[in-house]
Length: 112
Image 1 (cartoon, rainbow, N blue to C red):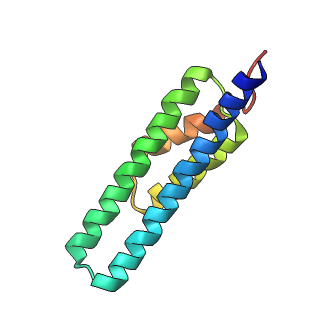
Image 2: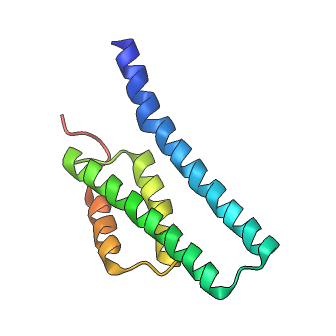
């Protein structure tokens, strides 16, 4: 029982933390590359659209996961909010906004 709980904890918390850390690292790497190689505007747009696509995919994955569970833990909601904020700053569209708003309406604790 304890091993199963520990495995769930690692899966739920650490994997999401790791994913957030990786995305942050990618952002820093892109910024460094942009400064070092002075990317053209077309290249910058491609990087921007690629990051936007990755954020959109992650938000959709989280949406599908937690809509099925009918609740979203507070840590996951904070993670989705951070992704949505950056997605929107990159010029994201209304479809993801709709999914995000639905996630905001979910309870943060499992119904018993």
